[in-house]
Every structure is written in C-alpha cells, then in structure tokens.
Amino acid sequence: DRKKDVIITGGENVSSIEVEDCLFQHPAVAEVAVIGVPHEKWGETIKALVVLRPGAIAIERDLIEYCRSRMAHYKCPTSIELRDALVRTATGKLQKFKLREPYWRGRARRVN
Image (cartoon, rainbow, N blue to C red; front, side):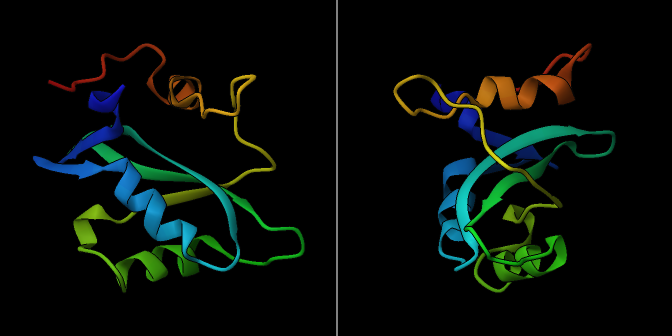
C-alpha cells in the first residue's frame, strides 16, 4: 500500500522507498526495509531494518551517516536494526505490515 510507504515525521512526508534506495547503495547492505515507528514528539520516526551481505560489517551510526551524506537529514533513519532476514511473502515481496506491527501494537498509526 503506497500510503503506508509514506512516513510522516514532524509534519514532513518521507518516502520509505527513497530511504531504502539510498541504503541499498551502501556496499554492506543486502536487504533493507524502512518503516515508520511511533515517536512521542514527531508522531513517527524512521527506522531501517537491514540485512547485511555475508561477511560484511557495518554499524548503525555508519549507516545513518551514509544516509545523512546523501539525503536531507529529516529523511534519514533515526535508528537501524540489523537482522538476519526480513519477512517476505512466498513470492518474495516484503511484508512491511508484519515488520511494523510489533512497534505499533496497541497504538493507532496516524497516517492520513
């Protein structure tokens, strides 16, 4: 759903696809999903879920700085979680709703 691919953080609309495209360019990144997670002040904040290439090493701070050197700072992830895999359908499509669900459990996601 395209509407859910837009993260509204501090009144700014951010395309999760744009942020994913940026992170995909990093040589250590094999897979990435960018989601909005709850933030008390901004409504949502940007979180990237990243799978590294085999043997690659990267830390959260370096990946965030990589984004900050290539995009407007408000579009950059405020946190990055390294994972072994991302949830996908049988046809290989990311299931972002399942990736978002643990963060939004018990909360209403405010996307208009």
